[in-house]
Length: 160
Image (tube, rainbow, N blue to C red; front, top):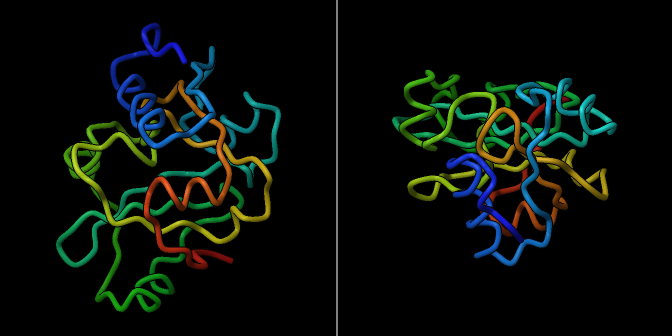
C-alpha cells in the first residue's frame, strides 16, 4: 500500500490500518465524503454501508460511535445501554482533541490514543462498509467484523 500521496491525517490512518493487518486501502475521493449521503453518492453504494464516525461526550470522556448511515444515534437509548448518565454530541474542539481529526473526516482509527468505541450492529447487514480515512475526502473499505476488531468496539443497537 502506498500511503505517501495521501494528506497527512489520512497517512496516519493508512498506517494504523497497515499495522492492524487491514487489506483495504485509504483512497482519496475527488468530491467530499463529509456526510453519509455524500460518501454513498461518491462510492455508488447504499447509505447504510457508510460507517459514520461520530464523537460524543459521555461522563467526562470521548465516546466514538460508528453508526450506519441509514439512521441517527439515539443517545438516550445508547446511554441506557451503556449505563451512562448522558451522551451528548462533542464540540468540534473536543473531536479534534480526541481524534486529531476534523468533523466530517473522523476515522475509526489513527487517533492520538485509543477511544472507547461503540459499533452499530446495523453495519453487520453489509458485506462491505466504508469508513472515513481521516479527512473529508478519504475513505477505506472494511467489514463489520474487521471494524469491531480494529477498534476494539462494543457492538450495540444505536438507532432504529
